[in-house]
Image (tube, rainbow, N blue to C red; front, top):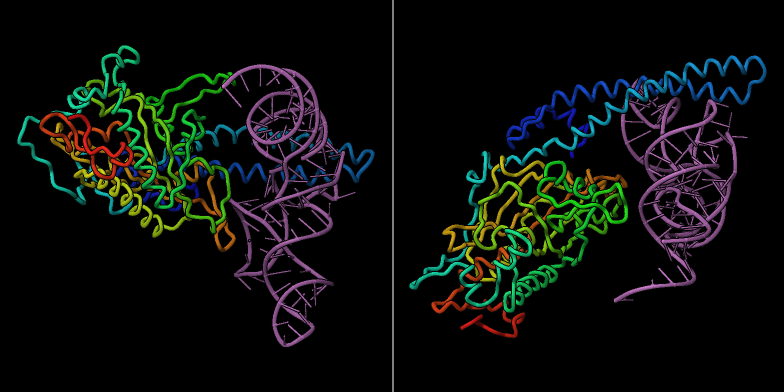
Length: 427
RNA sequence: GGAGAGGUGGCCGAGCGGUCGAAGGCGCGUGCUUGGAAAGCACGUGUACGGUUCACGCCGUACCGCAGGUUCGAAUCCUGUCCUCUCCGCCA
């Protein structure tokens, strides 16, 4: 969310930002509503002032004079009420629109309509070549008795999977590697709820917009409140301090959220159906930074969370590239996004394993997440987040890149401590 | 699941229908004092929005968990709701 006052003074910037993001938004309509709203507030406050002044007279006046004042008050009160009522729908409409104003992208975010327009900014590692018949990750998982997709489908439908045996151990190893890596870099691990209230999703700017991608169910204890299954622990972690006023001395806060993630993947029928690239339930370690409203610091943090993700991919010995997401693909909330994509041999392409976003104060405003600055002023924080590691998707490059001619898989050194020291799965 | 208590400013804590944006204390700021500090003393010290002023300011509106209601008038009364705490029960 952007500040209404800021929008008033930067209407052109907001309009241009929306256009660059390919998100239709009528700034003019919002400004008109805002002007009307402000005018009405003035008028109502004047009436209210009159009411308060008369009200004070009541206690000091008796007899006929008192009756006169009371009669006058009645008409003033009616006027106040009328104006108060008129204010409500106006305010509601403005609030609704405010949730939809796109955060203008940073100047250096590459212009473009979609994923195809993203710009590669870095490439790391040698692509593997195979002098034998390459297997894709699903073949490898089956060969190693690490997965059962058929029974999972019967149990839970498409885009489900059951990891077994070494598959479970490998997933846990990868998660734990990510957790240890990020924790050693000063991030505090948080194991957070994935069943969340709607405000947390609105606050992190998933709503309005992602309702169809999010599982919803009735709250077992409160009749009229639906609960939602968060698609990422970013929701809980970023909303962790919602409504609070943090002390600048305690910032930045760096957290590592650990949780399962749930996504409906509605509207993706037929897309990425083979294997475990796109699934309804997965596990993830997520990095989140909350700091003061300082663009220079945010930029530094953004570089840091990208570097953290790179360290993870390097620990897994995976070739990867980094792309700057095109404006049309960034979405409403972030001002800039980097994707980290690991090489996935079976796809003959890099596939997204991490998304690093920065938001300025866009999320913090919605979450009412603030801090008291050194000068005593209260301001909204800046927030950022990125994946540390998400499974099972990361298993795709991991298994495929490190596969051996006999269908076994070499374990990267960094993972061995988490796998009883083994250097090979299968074989 | 049952019974009770409570949510007030940066913090503690009074207020229980008008004179309350809110006593008192702590903390913080400024000054006096001092060689310097501590102590002591004096004064000051919430936020947002709008109006006005060259400016210091001044004026208006709103905020005492949140949302409604009663009333000429609510921190104070009523209803709902969220949260916290205590006791009993149940479960792990």
